[in-house]
Length: 192
Image (cartoon, rainbow, N blue to C red; front, side):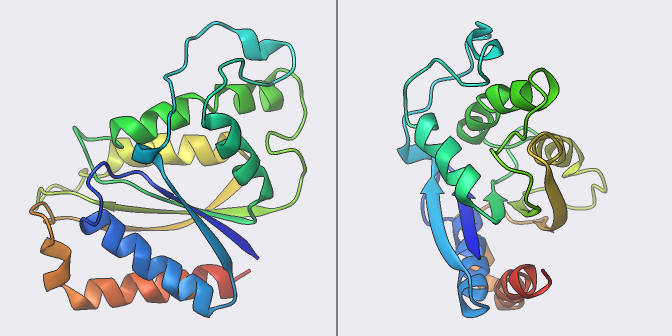
């Protein structure tokens, strides 16, 4: 079972990364082979909206996104983590998502599997946000992530959305939440 973790936070070692790290530990404990891509360390241009992908379902921009496509195709499970920024995912992660336009073309224009084959993949989402008492806090972010998973034929299998986490290392004061992330990682792999 190959797990691809996409770390979308621009703040390395922060709250989102801490949750993702625990999730991955749980997944590995449950038997997964995990690889993490740190989006802010990759060179990923924004989508140019040039329609170059319409011919073969391949993006014409040659950067680190070419490697991301390959890793996504190889994965059985995908976990994405991003802090809530202006009610959506981080800008770095959004650039990666926008570049999945080539995969959208494969599915909806060329009528071929977006990730190269029709095997069943599952996805999970992790996020933190600073606000409290706001029931719609993660709503816009979830629309983006669920749309991505639907485009990629990935079954949305759950999320861990934690409000009232803003200051650096705030999540370290919530060991029960870190434990929950670990448990969710285990469950994500064992509930195949």
